[in-house]
Image 1: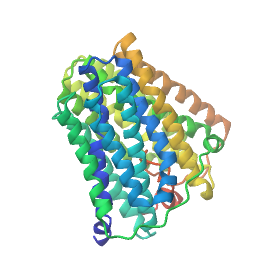
Image 2: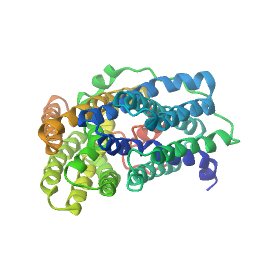
Image 3: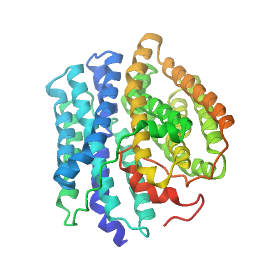
Amino acid sequence: MRLLISFAALFASVLLLQLGSGGVAPLDAVSGLELHFTKAQVGMLGSAHFLGFFIGCWWAPRLMGSIGHSRAFAACASAGAIGMLAHMMWVDPMAWAGFRVLSGLSVAGCYTVIESWLQGKLTNETRGRATGVYRVVDVSGSLVAQLLISVLPPASYMSYNLLAIFCCAALLPLTLTRADQPATPAAPRLRPRLAFECSPLGSMGVIVSGITGAAFRMVGPIYGIAVGLSTGEIALFLAAYVAGGGLAQIPVGWLADKYDRRMILVWLSIGAILACFATIALSGAGTAGVMIGAGLFGFTTIPIYSVASAHGHDYARPDQRVELSAAQMFLYAVGAIASPVVMSALIAAQGPKAMFVLIMAVHALLIVFGLTRMRARPSVARTSYVYVPRTSFLIGRLLGKARDRAPGEAGE
């Protein structure tokens, strides 16, 4: 209990940050369509977010080393709030893309500070419990953020102001805490080549995860509107996706620790293809059918990043873990930057089902590549499966000890 109390400020900041930043993507999508942006322009906003996210991941550790944790967090949270508040002051797709770069930078920067702070304060005895609570808070905040758009009117000052208030409120717990700031860790080097050297399949898996996740979260509202969902139903649609992914972590983690992770990736991609078929088939079966399809899609696709990441770490030395995690985050961002603008343009040209057709094609390629890699070299001893949030380049340092446990070993 003392542990949770000592980290209460950090966890409160995570929750408030998720409520603010997590609600921007769906709100931008429905607001952009309300303001007659083209579907390609709405997709561009999602790509801009992940461009800002990558910039923030690279820049935040260096900023934190220069000015400290609290001031770096304040600077990043302020950038996000400015981007949210400016939306209705300058209604233009290119301007909004710039504002979304700020929001992406804000998310990556704030999470870098939070994860650095956790890493600096945790011990081997407390790491398992604290990171477990951290993930629960993060996923819960993300789930509630998707539901927010059901009560936020699109293209409204009030809606963006409320999200900015959440973002500003995230400043209070962390900047007012009396706890001493930890030492600032060195920024990890960015070596994308390292990910491919350790595991080509793991690298392709995180890229596919970026393509799939960014498409659904950033372009999903366009699909929802196209198949006749109301704004409130779009909120449930996105929440069902997040909830499905959360429910998958325990069974997929157990399977990934027990069986060859390459085969788990193959079966997840097969499941993703079947979920795409189900989503398309159920699009005319009413709201309940669409929600079931979204939940199945989240269940089969969200765990792919963690399984692919774990497979890459199976082939890495302990001293490579932090840089490998940063490289995997970079590859995820590459897929996520390209995906929304391509998917939205595809929907505009070919209709809403086209997004899932392209996602099926991407996962089919991952299946073929996975089966090919299984013949290229044998499996090795597995590190412990860890659910990996896509939050900052420092997540590898925070989860490093958990990875080095043997699969199935009890948490710390």
